[in-house]
Length: 370
Image (cartoon, rainbow, N blue to C red; front, side, top):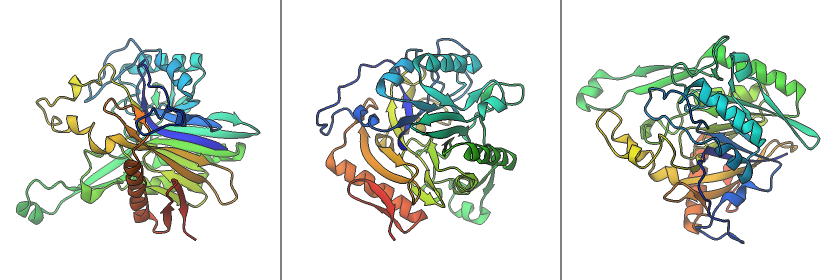
């Protein structure tokens, strides 16, 4: 089973640059979405024209026509459990689901109850089936589904903060160290659901909205928050072939673990300006988060990749990366040769920190050196 996986996706009806033939640096990279059995992305925005704006730092929405655009671009399946899902309430996400269903784009991660939100979307591919889950750890208050409240599928995180008073007196302004661990009841539920899905299907993939965006994470603590690797490994141990991470808006390491593959962050793929996310909203303004607003669309934001994953091989999942760049409007383009080489080198360096046997070849193939 050949999967094409990308990270965060925001579409809002833009006119797209046509793909080159053959594609050259600067040409549209949307053509990379074609050629697999299934194309998967994280839908980072609700499609709706109604609902009440949530009281949070960034609240976004895009037109209902975005669902048809996703289908036209080649998306087959999207995750919905993310920190913008209920930016315009449950009605906003109900509109999104209805639009996706009408466009023929499958989805997982939102429901009218916790049972529905955590249910796997089973997708037939050839003679096999893929069970796809979508969970969120980057969880605004009240966004998680409960037995009697609509919302998204949660894997909550508990945090504590450690500091040395003597060191802080000598180096004031230094952030404390953040310890974090996934909330055990949520993890056990996810494990149980994955084991169930594994017994009934050929393959299991889990989308996880988690981690820390690049502009918020102190370099000394990054790139992964402490809860991420233990959580991902437990999901693989439960039966997941593939864990797909997103939310940090940059690329993070990849890891082969047991019989699974963990993509800690798949970065951005396309990020249109939309209601609540536009050039004006990124201008610094008074408040604690003002310095971070421009940083959200700088640096690592523009370096990404398309992840080509093959499931079902005798030696476990296989992975190849097609590097991409995002242009000044956050549209995916074919990378300059030097940018492509840099992206692959960065992924290799980060991944080797987790597993020194990781090798990233010049063609983007990621493997373990035997």
